[in-house]
Image (cartoon, rainbow, N blue to C red; front, top):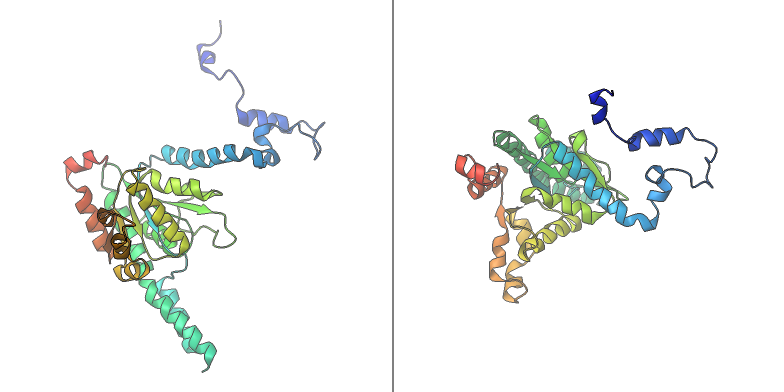
Length: 301
């Protein structure tokens, strides 16, 4: 009689086992051969006709890993890749001040002063991520910081979580530039994307809030897609915090959109302005009632 344990063993070899066994076959190896297993054939998987499969894989991989890691709630931090830490911005200003007088020095000074002025957003992002990571660790369901995985504000978010001993997620994307992930992301939670659409979907899938710092086209794209999905009811509403009222009101004339009927008056309540990390965290505490057991359980926290 067979060992009862054998009844519970796999009926078929795993894909990993078959891939290893197939690799030992050399008779039909070579560039002109189609003998490779389909799932182990990069040339086949990268064929244009396989785009639907690649999109599915790009959806599944981060989803499966986050599920395995028990990640249920996230706060997404958007913002420019070009905003520097305060110490680096100050160093650039010092270098510019040391240049000889002339047009080159004036340009360098102007750029360095702008970097230094904007660097406070890096520091607030770093502090906010630390607050989220520290305080949410005590909740029933911890909240994890998610960024685009690059430099600037994204780095600040991952760095803030890292510096208080927490995990954070980075959703990097292959670009001609700015494609290297920053060094503060939890390795198991550092993902690389080809498709912008799948990346943005993952930003929203677990998010309980979006925190948007100053940024350029990419930041605006992420912000307005999220606002549109909430405005049209394609996803549930969640707090959207815009850091820096002065920056955002100069960039976007919301009153003009309302006055011309391009958005409804109620759409202005889809977001709110904040100025500091403390104010942002306090706002989320008020919205979700964090720290109150009845609210914690109602929110899944």
